[in-house]
Image 1 (tube, rainbow over the protein chains, first blue to last red):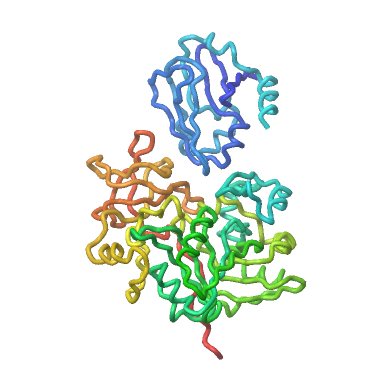
Image 2: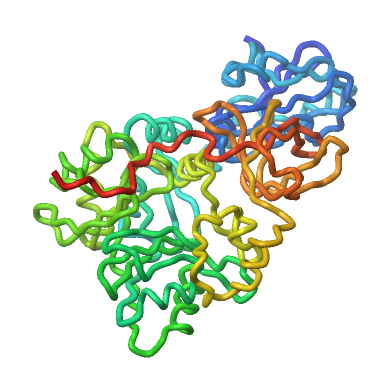
Length: 125
Length: 369
């Protein structure tokens, strides 16, 4: 199973070579409630670490999704725009929102692994 | 934060709680907003709306008094009849929207918005003539029972018979082992349903008894908002406020042609004659996305023509809807517009409201057999 990294803004990231697949965690999905729409980034867009590149809309609110790295959007999950259920899948399957080609993969070094992230979310509740 | 008499019941049900108008209120329960919304449309939902204010105005000339504070007619209202209306300020803006029900010749019951309670009560007191009495019912809870099953649930759980109670009417009921309940056939969902004004100390027992019915489920404020949005009902503080007149808000149907003694009559009469500079309309998104309060409404030339005052996803229509104010030249159903969300124009159109047909009953009394 692919190793998944987590940000404290509740993005989850699968790393494949120099490409980061970015989705949002179960915790974030549950906090947002029923999800109805995702605004995807355009392919080719340059993003900076910490920049919002997508917006997830739930019945209650709109939540920005932040890029964990500097890089270029190489793919956006168009299927998700038609079927929001996909976001509940693992990020390593259909649950990714966009794939970002990283300029500096070392930017991911500080991110949490699953055990750390679980500890982190427990501390939030 | 303030709590309603049902607060512990919401917590016990595992509700996600949040602040609304100074109260800690249930936003949604375990099944989520969309499931709750759909349950009300297909079965029956129970809402705790005890945060709203309940008042009685009583005394000679009470009907004339309401005609001096609202643009609606009250003198000829039948006993038991409820009227949706607004309190207007001297500039013709809206202080609050409310339902006022005539209990008897000189006695009226009114339900006011939670966030407006203090200012409404102060305003009513300030204008109250000698001889009239204002009573704030601080010890009553309010439970809304909304949905196609509502009538049967009241019958089966509380032995309250509402068969002869038309829409927008009130009755007194005496459920076994409970004190007097005021049952109003009103609501904020577009479904058939009731609001039960019950003594606070019986509230939890009545709530739990209703909840035991298999067709009833608790519904939070989030679904209450999406349900009312589908009906095009305005939400005070968002779709109507102290600057919007009832004419701009497209509430002409509440404005009596025979009264002129209420605050702001001058502006309201002028706008009815000469037109308004902005009008409340429904908006339906044609392209994907969600537009919320504050989004600019633009025309085909990308010029601003208005602003969205409410917006969200409609669980019934599976598309995004909203309401807002536009230049009246564009206030025509089917008119193609854009709503600007985070710098992006989303295709939309002006839509007539309600977005979903109302299932409320007739307001007419049944003919005697």
